[in-house]
Image (cartoon, rainbow, N blue to C red; front, side, top):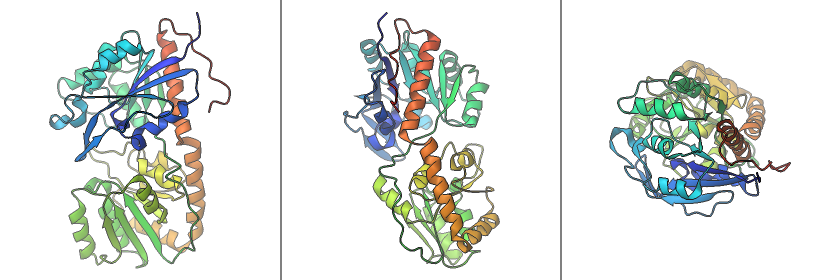
Length: 390
């Protein structure tokens, strides 16, 4: 039997934009052992934005931009969408592996599981809070997990959720990647007095920015906080900053392009991510952590979800909802800038070791190949990856 590349069909609404989700496929360029195809929605609705898909033409992957049905139906938001053309694309490509960057209870996961033919099924999951879903989604989740060959999991908590829902197969933990060309460190000018703290993300109460304001009110006046983001908690944050006498030390600005976000982060001494655990919120990863660390900026994070594991030694962890402990840490960092310098170096090492797009692509390729071998996909004899591919 002749060798041929492993043909993979990856389905990911998160890859509708090149910078947001497609860059991790770029390292596959030049790999003769893989033939990777990516299905993305033509138009996507998320957090009040309407996103038109970037055109095809990415290296390492053939992008198929397809229309979807039910892009924002009901309270389930993006978990109800399906691709009316997916069956035809599967028939045309006859993939060895179908990879879904979608939760197992989504309708598109059910669609792929039903249409898969002989293909192995690989699922990439983020959901890290176990809760029983309303009909028919609990049944969909258990059916899809029962037919899945390999799980790519964002965290141990996400793994525990799929295990509790009946999945018994192999699991590989996988992180997000960061665009190091955009989120790159820059030479820093002489450090001014004080401490410049910042936050990037949605302005919702669960992100713990009230704790940051309470801590700021307890430390020296040359410590400032700059916030980049939008959301329903913006006005309460402004009012709280005024009531605490922090109006001159706290500023809020709207979203920016990735290069503007990177420039904003590079102007900080440390980035804050103080998410609070609730019955429905537990930080699944915290992508802004690795964006900051890739810029050489350490992170002050809470104990919520995956934040401590992703931050590693490239920053500091404080208890959730504890402004007193946060204020003490801020005071220590302000008094000893060498702590910031050593954490900055550790942050860069953390990204280099775990969160490059090359590292993520290697994890994807290994999981796809393992799933095809486990399922014994008919007619597939893999081409050996050339030495030094990564």
